[in-house]
Image (cartoon, rainbow, N blue to C red; front, side, top):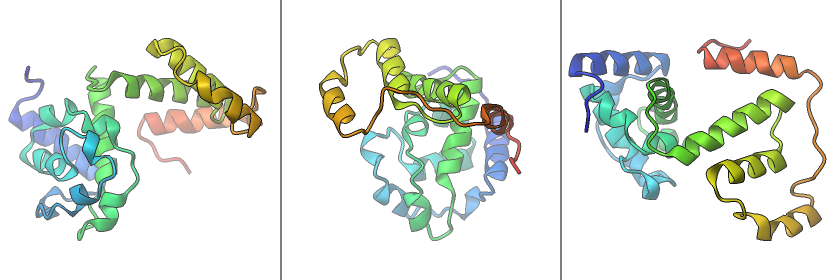
Length: 186
């Protein structure tokens, strides 16, 4: 595995991410409650407690190259179970953003889905499931992935063929731009 950061750079990055997430990495005593309760653990290559431990050690290479930061559902089950309320989803999100800045993506289709979802929000101000599913299926090469479900989804009005957008799409774009730059939205 090619090294991206040396240990000192990794520690600096981990400390910065932890500070931004308002997390004290040293408070984790590796009880494992976060990992035991994680609904995505079966898909992870590194468990939530391992992510925190690697960040504490400054091994951000392993964190940024892991599938786990891309697969975290941000459900906060780990935070609810943690005796110190360590915000692992925010650590995962910020690590994923850092990996993306460096061109690292361990799970291509998650990034692809996220990019399409984000552009749909930018364009319409809210999610458009029909466009999201169609664009994802075409760009991922899974053209017929959901076709068997479409008639039932249309009949039950889970998705609709007409597109709707919010009134002030520019305001939504401004919010998204501020979030991407790491700024607070007020």
